[in-house]
Image 1: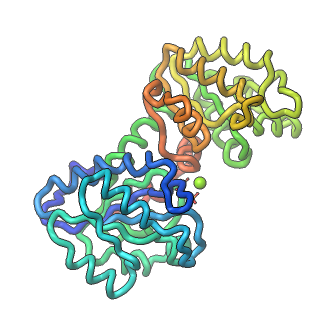
Image 2: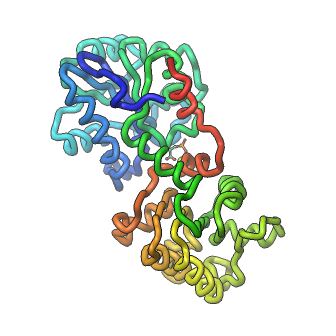
Image 3: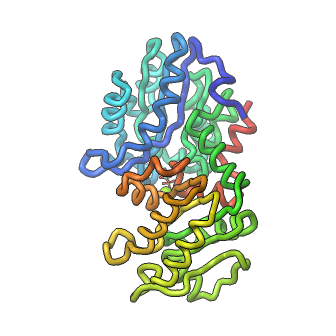
Length: 347
Ligand code: 3PG
Ligand code: MG
């Protein structure tokens, strides 16, 4: 796989896939972390003389239709503030106007294209669509780790037709999550919670092969117990829950706290209960306190865990926080990701 440092961006028109799938309410961005994370890559490319950038992203799930509530316009404004630079907005990258805007970009200019999922071809992983989109560009950069578990045209097809490399965020995600698949320190512990059992089971199964202990909490633990799911011996399920099964119980909290304090490497994904309700956040609070106090290398990720850590202003207490939700889980389950494979096989 190639990285930014392997590519000469001078005098090039650069197509960059980012993940600006951020929460927006009434046109206002609620949380701009994913936008900030892409700034180093954009700034790196712009430092090389006469380069120009078009950014591509999806937002939400408009299902191939133009839906104004999923427009990336608010993101262009936010990005402009963060970069302290005008950001041009391309309403339709697959139109004559989009073509013209792309070709007329001046040196050092940056444009953001409208939500790529407004085109049904994106999620269909359409080859012709990818070719049309990238033909005015000299090079493609994928900095959208959190969208690279999808076999979609802008992540999985474009690298087949353009020299491509990983952006700085993608590079960091791969480096840190590879550590999580091969923990450099022992004992290594994974703490997995949350609600979507179908996405978490493959992770628990894979991490059980690698980690000394895997602690399980959240709704997935309730379901696993109800269904009598069998796990390897090093997978620990809660001994008790609160009334209504909305959180892990006091005995489990004590046991998990003890176990976590002994770990030297910790990966955390998913809350222990319905943490958004005060009555049921004791388990998640206790696990968070134990992890952040442990003398260990700490990696966290997943939409809900990141939201929780942010509410505690605790990001600095982790060595790495993944920007991926589904993508982090796919990576940790040891499966190939279409966007990463495409970069590895790129021309
Ligand atoms: C995410 O937010 O997890 C990514 O942007 C992928 O979005 P998706 O789940 O709609 O494909
Ligand atoms: Mg998702």
